[in-house]
Image (cartoon, rainbow, N blue to C red):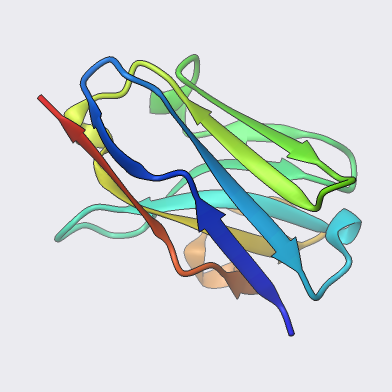
Amino acid sequence: EVQLVESGGGLVQTGGSLRLSCAASGFTFDDYAIGWFRQAPGKEREAVSCINNVDGSTNYADSLKGRFTISSDNAKNTVYLQMNSLKPEDTAVYYCAATFNICLGSATMVDYWGQGTQVTVSS
């Protein structure tokens, strides 16, 4: 059974930090790109960042570069998203997503989804 289990969300003040984790199981982790998407109330789900376990490449939404860092621990089948200098507009449900072989910015091309973790940034 494929599972993507997110953790690490919560309530933080503006300027604070959080680290999200995504623990994967049930598929060959090294063959997949693992990404983070987020969805705020009333908005579409948007791509945040992605790491391709095939070649180690990473990408980020332009607006988040410099504040968010994605990393992967292949021994633990876990991907992390370090989020610094958080802003109220970062408030959203953050979803972990797996896509075979390539990072894609489209939510419609994802193979597997996690259940999501809430991140709330207070002003």
